[in-house]
Length: 65
Image 1 (tube, one colour):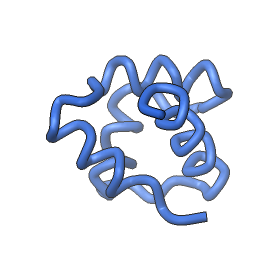
Image 2: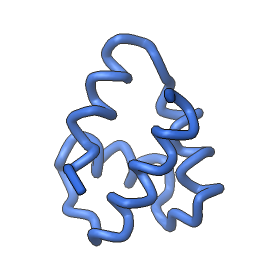
Image 3: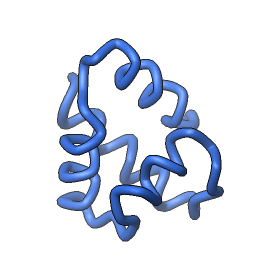
Image 4: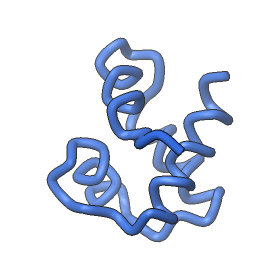
């Protein structure tokens, strides 16, 4: 699987999704990070567990197919 963080940053910068919507979908998929941690993951300020990246990818799929 490709790292979904760059795609998430691109979608956020293009206003295609909001961080709040992304976090809600990520959380619904089973993500453990709070909103600030997810923001740090997306901007590579924190290193997430690989399973969190999978959940992030699933969340983006559900929001922006």
